[in-house]
Length: 401
Image (cartoon, rainbow, N blue to C red; front, top):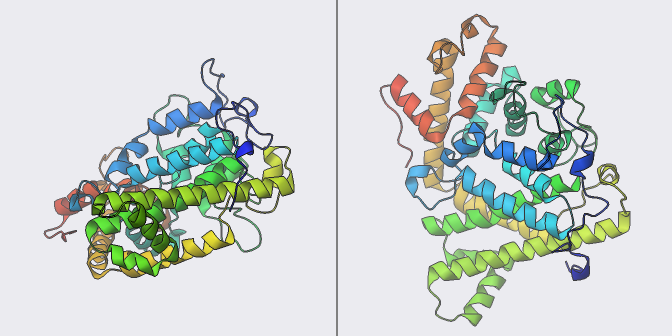
């Protein structure tokens, strides 16, 4: 998708009318004095970075468990890459970069140990207690579980950041949506996040940045692991084309540089496509405010039809060759066993969950409430902590390699 370079926000210092204005935020659940040195969205971004949850991301799996190699991506490195892409998109579209970056940085807080494997295991185990949704868990972390401030639980983030966190993938109420997770409904009763509308454009660019980052970087990690080869990329028209371009320009280039040149071009093309689509949508809708974007009834920042097809091809390719590879599936099975064992152990004896004072009385709760306490504890674990806890409680811990 072509884009209009004259409409880009690079170096202009201007904010478009459809961008969020941090000086006109809808505020925080608990009122706080305005900072004389930082905007409200800067404060949110800074609070997110200084959390325990953010630090834990460095030991949470993306695809490969940490001890398989120091160069594979973790949730933390993935999150930083998403934030970089989100900020680039926000700058190009004259949005509030701090808000886009904040939503990107917080979007994976609720992920369990062992990536989607842990999430699927917890969702199944909690089927009678509302299931598990990592987005809802992210909201719970920043509104309840992070306990650092004297005046409130959580981070007391602005309405706009919380709205972007829960709705960056679209409305939660309306046609085509499923049940809203209870943690989101519970918070929404106290602080209405307009669950039936789209999010502001800053959150939309954070969401598409996530797609761009993990599609590109999972291929990179797959190539690094040897589970994917360069020859296999010929299955994907977009990557086959980029591979040909790089080989023609740099004949005989060594493989690590060749891979990097292909990956950087993939990111660039996807980013430029989203910019072009968003510009076209904004020109058509002509929103005069961030709320006009919310009420437009459609997503503004997305791929063009050609890139939707390419994105679909890449996802299918990754499922065939990486996510469902026998070696990865064996590790996933062992990770599922660890999560299941820990859940059963903590449900039987909640006193085994770390700080006994913090979990006092959990054993007297109804089963569904006890399960939610165990959910919060398990979801907060890193891969390494979960493995160590399993070794402490069980005679044999499966190898994740």
